[in-house]
Amino acid sequence: MKKLLAVIVVIGLLGAGAFFYLSSNAGGLIRDGVVAYTPPVIGAEVELASVDLDPSAGTASLNNMVIGNPEGFTSDHLFKMDQLMVRMDTSIANLTSDVIRINEVRLEGADMIYEIGRNGNNIGRIQENIDAYMAELGIESSDDSEKKFIIEDVYVNGTNVKVASDMLGGRSVGFPLPDLHLSGIGERENGVIASDAIKQVFGAISGSVQRVAQNEAIGDLLGNVQGTGENVVKELEDKVVDEVGDRLKGLIPPM
Image (cartoon, rainbow, N blue to C red; front, side, top):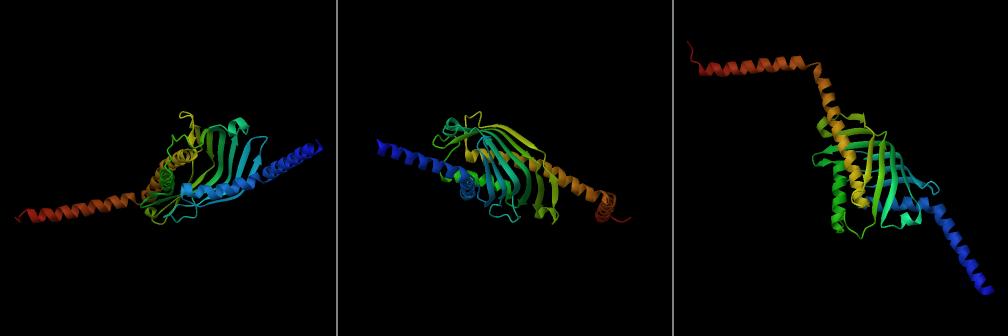
């Protein structure tokens, strides 16, 4: 009986020690996992300084995160953010469910470089990389063998965007991105796999950036032309008149 009690005490102490170790080092383990496993999915390097956990509130904060550019793009980074916060139900029932529900993902104060090249843009390339990764593994969005997620709300706030492109003649266009709120990712499908959820978020950001970038770029170009517009039109007008006159001279015989 004493030996049995001793074994139980040892197992209890080992379990408590393991729990304490995992709790105190969980942030580091998550950080290492993000840095190791995200790049193959998106085709770009990921840097992450630290992860802060608050189990009682069910939150994880990913601090000073940098998402690099996919191959073929040369700007410093795609995303550089102060904080990416995730809030979810940390109960055993939710964490062990086939469909894990995440209450909120909040991206605050990001610095984004949207690079446009001859073969598309950097966000679009990441979406293509995700598709290629899923296809290579034979994974589809409806694959029941993969863990699925429902994300109730995604907030992208305070993002500053810089557009980099050779098509802008060496100039850059910068602007704040309107705050984004996505809701119910995976709700209708009763869960989507992680890579599909990431793709939906990137797709929404890309669409918003493209709309704003087009307006900003057009406005910028029009502003530069506005001061010389009348002179340009007059010069073109005179040139057309001269060319038409020369052609008419060749068609009409002299009197």
